[in-house]
Figure 1 (cartoon, rainbow, N blue to C red):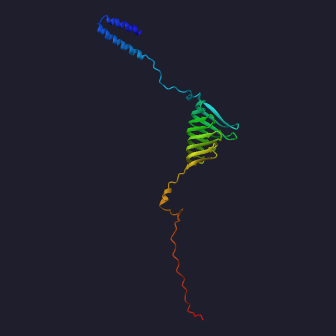
Figure 2: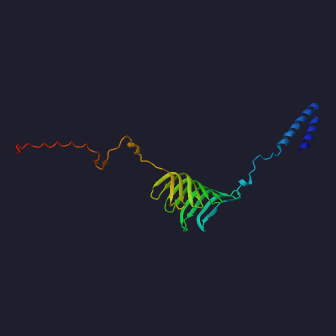
Figure 3: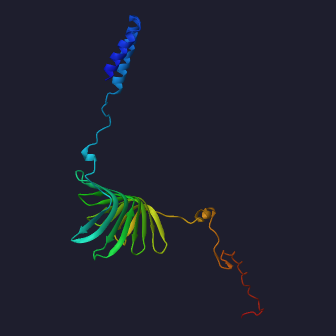
Length: 238
């Protein structure tokens, strides 16, 4: 269609102009034709192709997983935004991770929450990270940035900073954490000890000992009494 229009315009213009003007006009039309053709060309996409290994084999808006040992359920996990990679044998939990733990008798013992988690599909070990919190039924709260749950030993490990708040209100902080999933036997590998604020005030010397209403500072010793002098009775001993 474009060729027909150009052909008609060219001959209509040639009838009313000289040969030189016609030649110049033909050159302009040819350049216009090339520009219009080049603009209509379809260019191939330069976006990198995504490998099938990098795409999840399954996605789900809600997933429930069970972790068992010796025929007994030890943990039940719920999560939103689940992506499973079957070829690489791992699962990503993107949001709202909630895990209920059970003791050997099947009783509920603690609960774990985090924003995200990674599960090794071969070992069923789970690494929770991003605002990890573990609350035992006895009232102990553990807060950290990342934590590994070992499905074989039912132990928890962390190399990150940990804050533990007991039911009594006692707070312990430090780096590194080990515990059973029931939060009965746990320890901080490198605890942080907070010294009292007046610890360094005693560097100038020991303070005097005091008791309520009394100064217990040692008083100076009393002078010794003079030696006893024997009196002369005046009797001669014969």
